[in-house]
Length: 506
Ligand SMILES: Nc1ncnc2c1ncn2[C@@H]1O[C@H](COP(=O)(O)OP(=O)(O)O)[C@@H](O)[C@H]1O
Ligand SMILES: [Mg+2]
Image: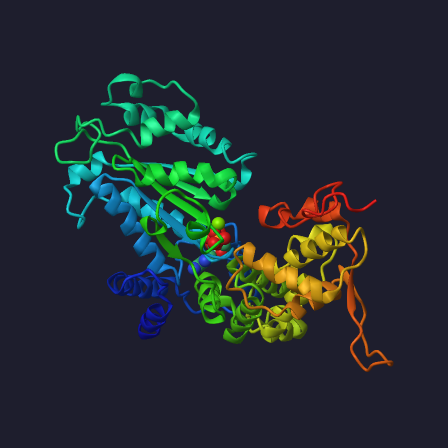
């Protein structure tokens, strides 16, 4: 197992992660994987099985960040090093973290923060005292929730505690010491003070202890707009000579630092990529979180199904959790019908209970259970369940709605939808996504969310007739469910004529 973990780690080291980091990380990952391996089930009574299943349901909750995050040790190690190196040198830096949704960006950054909080400066060339003095403040902002890009300055300012603001302003004479000016000016004065030659704000030896701010901005691409001035300010402060800002921008787009005008050369920003998980990686993640209750083939099936659709760990966790719930319900039903729910032993509830429980191998989730859970998720339709679709399917619904609006309500053609879908997936940063378009369309049709019309062979010329897609969902329903910006951006505006379509429809 150790060997397997080591070799898979090397293969999966993302670009930009150097060999030394990857090696350190591989060992850490093997330790994490070994520690996370669940003990083999011992008690085979139905009551014990129910307990294990309930624990698995909790462990698979995607809103819960686990302690062990297999497959992300490399990113965890490099990010922690970049941040602690900057803090040790007391100079700001800019880091850009990218990857499709559900690639573990947020949970890894959470662990980076935990590691930085306990960091004591060892091995970074600075003394423990210097490290303690440089202990940073942490602020998180989600740019997707701001009504305008500029608003983010106010949001950041509000989140910096008063004592940290005072410390950031300390040691600086003149107007820099005051808290006047708009949010942007105040932040600039604190985070990228001008080099006035006094040395008071420099990171040099003997300089005043300088508080640093580690600022994480999720969905940082939403700060684009009008010349990218907001991005320029933030990245500019992080890269300024006197910077006190460690900026960690997070987004789906892999190449934001190249496509946006961030005001500093893109190679001044350290990029860390979170590649989309493969089936093997998702299987390891599921196994680490709740492996004990899965037949290995069932965990593999969950992982494979999600890998071909989105590679989103959230989807894998949701599917796996659904499968565990299927088994739990079956055992509960068997216990109820056998009249013995006290879990006094696997043969205590009569032969009916014994055989049902035996069929689930004392609460083991099988491939059949995964298929049942998948069918329940795929077959789901309507507002309440659209939110559970795979991202590619959500995007497909948005694209169909947009094209329908642009065509003034007419059903769009499959070929046009396919083309727009590919572009929208790329724009949204699902760039490494591999699912077949047809698969997503079939899944929506199975769920009755769309209807594919037309097609067949044209008798006159033997060619294929065009196929059209009718959307069975209203724009309002889509807007109500798909509130994330990646989808909102694609959906037609309320009452409008579609994306850039103006008011061509009468
Ligand atoms: N390597 C991993 N190991 C365990 N759980 C993971 C891993 N990667 C992602 N997850 C889980 O998947 C969910 C989504 O991860 P998250 O960090 O929010 O992804 P992102 O920020 O890239 O969209 C979270 O519940 C997280 O705990
Ligand atoms: Mg996230």
